Length: 343
Ligand code: 5AD
Image (cartoon, rainbow, N blue to C red; front, side):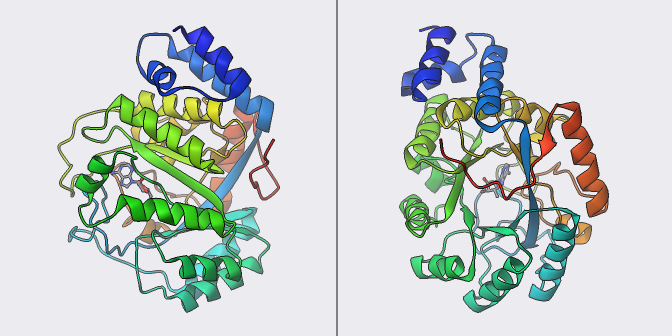
């Protein structure tokens, strides 16, 4: 096995075996070759347009207790907030005004937002001529259906890891099978589906990451969100020592080889670990950025991991800064909704 035979095969078939993926995840070659190839494929399929998705973190209440997550139920050290529907709609209006074409509504798993409340919010947001992505966790088929009918276009639900044992260790009260069923239900309902996983979880092997990559390939996701695991000081995993930044870049690049036309965000967690994290991800296969458009006062209490970049600028300044940054990379902000264009 050599890096060039693997990249040639990926270029022709957009498919690799677990062993080949494992080889790419190891350190036995110059990974800049992989990054260059992923960047070339991104450019070939998707060009230089970068899609911006404005992220609204509307509630940090969560009924779950995942060991890795800063807003886990047992974290009593954070102040909890809920952005009320009308305020959420006004944030959305501001973001739409600045130029956002997609908004992502994200929260912990919070039952305060009933189906009726969310339907109302989605309905109002659709009047702004936006694509709407939901990222609110595991719900029943009927709830997903209700949101779809209200106008939601996309859904993000990371599988977090495909290693069931690891998954259940990370939250003993959750069910991996149920999470997978949620992903299948979302696809059945016609959502554009985003999934993904964390890289560098304690006791997560490279083999397991190869399985995670193949899982997304098999599921044929429309979007793949990959982020390094970052230990949060107010969680049981606070003492984990690792820096999975480079490995996360490799995972992004490999996903680009296997799913050449999907949307891949340069996630904020990348920026939390490296000052140029998002730029590097954009140069290794990513084509999406998700700027935070939540008011700073709330955003501060939505720390899933430490070091999250906070939006100190106004929405306009933030948008312009991103635009300038992209220009230096030879890229520009896309002006369409950025749905998955299948080749
Ligand atoms: N480090 C990195 N990513 C995290 N997430 C939650 N906690 C952490 C952490 N400590 C990710 C999960 C979740 C997404 C919204 O944030 O993958 O799905």
